[in-house]
Length: 297
Image (cartoon, rainbow, N blue to C red; front, side):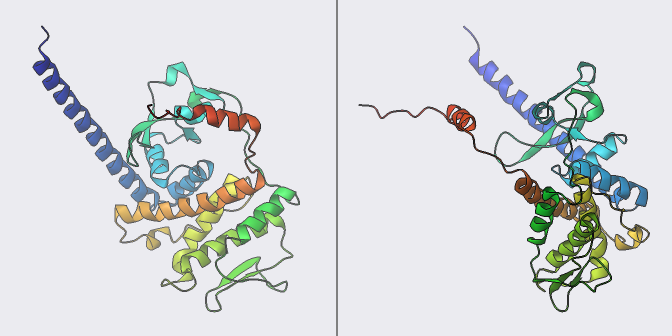
């Protein structure tokens, strides 16, 4: 007869070992993320690279971007195997054993665990088709409308203004020069909208100089996301802005950039190409639902 007591004991030990291994992996990833975030916010060249990486991977957290930069400095666009499959690509067989470790949502609850990701150079398949917003197109007009709708203060046209856009924190107004070309307007408006959202109608202590780099960084990653040409922010004062920050402060600051950029860019994306509910999609969703059990008679 099988010794069920020993089997159950072995199962308990195995579960404990697995949990300890996962906890160690998570602690190592957190330490690597914090170290990478500190380095990114202290070195202008790494910060500039972070902006490009975040712009090309805007749906991924700042922490994951920092992790990828620490493990694979030459990486550009990354994703989990499932994400690559949705994009029509798959991980090359000879690269499956060379993953980049990132945080992924756990299958149980809302917690996060450590999972595998791969750079695009480790995959093969369909070419990616990035979203582009050329000047003078209906898509750019929709993008600008969506962007301006994210202002939390009144917006006023000011044709005689020297700059394309400006948030006046004293008047709590966003001024826009309507004669600005689309691409320049998008970049400038994105910066000023970030600033007015940071100020939150005067609800928070606000200093334009202290918030400007974050706002310009949000604008840059959004422009990168949509292929809009713009210059990187001035990073000459990076060290002074982050002086005294703890590692936790550093990655939270980077997270603020990613979160706002993702939110506004996602709204633009949805308005440019809204998801269409088709009969085939509805049938597929119904087929994925669990069967309804009838009550016992």
